[in-house]
Image 1 (cartoon, one colour):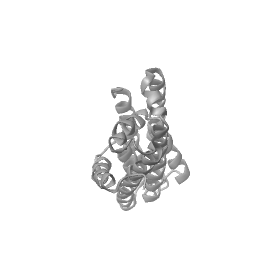
Image 2 (image 1 turned 180 degrees about the vertical axis):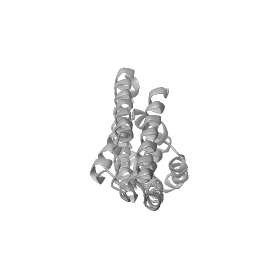
Image 3 (image 1 turned 90 degrees about the vertical axis):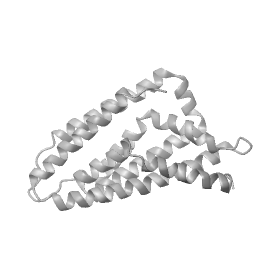
Image 4 (image 1 turned 30 degrees about the vertical axis):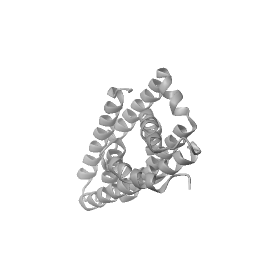
Length: 207
């Protein structure tokens, strides 16, 4: 087994604690669930989980170390993420009124794609994984398989926790969205959440 059992048992609670900490990914899933129901929440959850695994793979291959060493590349990706989130914020804020009595969620594939892009355009995810996972990696064994296994644990935990958040938010949205006014308010709230995430990404420190 690439990862020692005792190491894995020590890693599980640490990864769970990280996944339970509210962050940008959880807020994105929450906003999509409130706005478009459980289906949108789960689509966002799956997109973020895939993005997380891509970051794990990048870190395992050593590309995240190169990103850390070149501030210009980091800044380019970070500001790409800022502008993409601002675009989502404007689109949500300006969304037209839905049909009366119905929630008007975006297609699940579009939500999945947006969540994936939002996660991939946050370079701090890759840098965080690069800082956190190696603490549980043994240099005496092949590094990449250990990275992938531990990364899958993080992604699986996020998939579970954010999935519960998306389902819960979706049920609330489905019960409350009985009027076009509420659905419009959800669009505005989603826009504010996306704008807040853009601000958070814009002002975050690189280190």
